[in-house]
Image 1 (cartoon, rainbow, N blue to C red):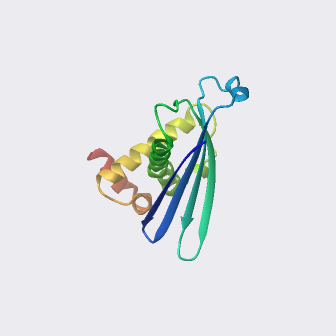
Image 2: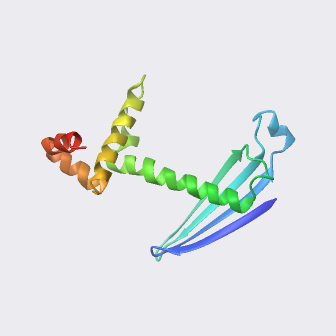
Length: 149
């Protein structure tokens, strides 16, 4: 088993990330063809008044000789940043997780509309949630913002 750890201090918190990596056992190889490694990622977040811990398990097709534990930990961090940048912002701004639209092409169409809205908001260097609230209160301003891009 290979391991790696990173510790970062920023924004009033300490974040520790640990990864443990091992090759796929033969019994799992038949269930996940192409899978090469199993990962266990632990994230510890310490603030002044509280701590949180998250453990994530993953399977990857990346061979051990291509990426060591440190590189896999960096890759997982980069993937999480993408998740935080897009999906968390969409949910926080548009309450996407609460949306009950689930059929046919409607969920994808709404996701595209939300992404387009975020693009317009970011081009104006505005913060997503306050901008959405302002545009909801003034739809004509939202329409003008969309046509002036």
